[in-house]
Image 1 (cartoon, rainbow, N blue to C red):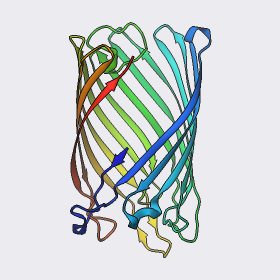
Image 2 (spheres, one colour):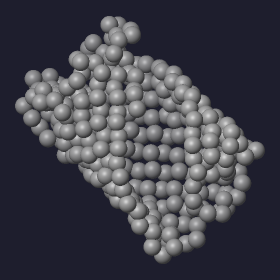
Image 3 (cartoon, rainbow, N blue to C red):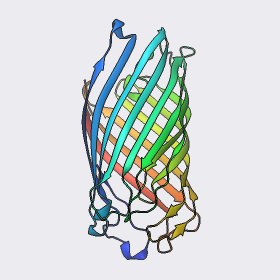
Image 4 (cartoon, one colour):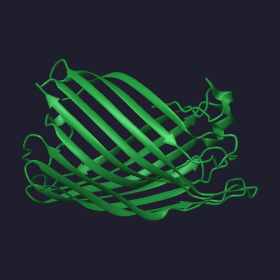
Amino acid sequence: MRSIEAEGNTDDIAGLGFNRDTVRGGAGIAWRPGGGLFEWRAGYAGTFHYFENANFRNLDNLQHEVSTRGRWRFLPRSALLFDTSYTFIRYTSSQSPQPSGDALRSRIGFHGLVTYHLALLGMVGWATSFYQPSNRALAPRQYDSLIANAEARWFLQSRPSLDSTTITSGISSVAVGYSRSFSNSYYGSFYQRDRGYLEFDMFVVGAVAAGLGFGVSRIAFPQVIEADGTDHEPFAQARIDGRMFAEYRITETFGVNATLLYDQINSPLPPVAIEDLNYSRWQAYVGARLFW
């Protein structure tokens, strides 16, 4: 994946900015005894983030993640869920201003069809970071708090089972939800994100799939203390995001699609004097998909 992200100053009208490339690969195993009533998966994924601008090559990092997740169906249309992951975050440059560290996330929850039309999902857990201090990097701050997901989804046609509930399943739906998470950050150690969203997915005449989505987030950054002692106060941003998707299935196994994305950041006074963190961005994609 290639991500385009400009710097927040006038010197980067069309420059490299924070453009970066991400390569990810992994493998896993799955076990489904009892005819699929219980399902357990475990695996590994490696992710490398590479910054194209030489000025930011000291932010290149490699992440190793080991994870496990599972599902136990205790009723025909209900299931208990669990997942746990441990991530090793390592910056490849010995001169990186960012601290390397680890992150642990674990959740447990419920997914069930309350009626043939209404599905509920709820997951709650805890996440903890273990960033390591060093002489060259900023003083790390640790995340140690709740993570959660909640969603209510209404199927316009009756849904008889818990299996796939996306537009690829051929059943139109409307969903409202909330998520709370934390991620590694290139400003400070991490950021926390609280997001509410509304989605509409549909599948019509056996060949056209479409989706609309809208979300509002609060992104919070902790206090940052640089290696030289410079102190930046914590701050939060408001973010708006939108998604439009359409796909036409030429055959039962091949389709062409288009995606339009929008996101906007509204930030208070910048914590870094030379940066303006407010922006709005449009992204457009066309693609093809092969599935069976």
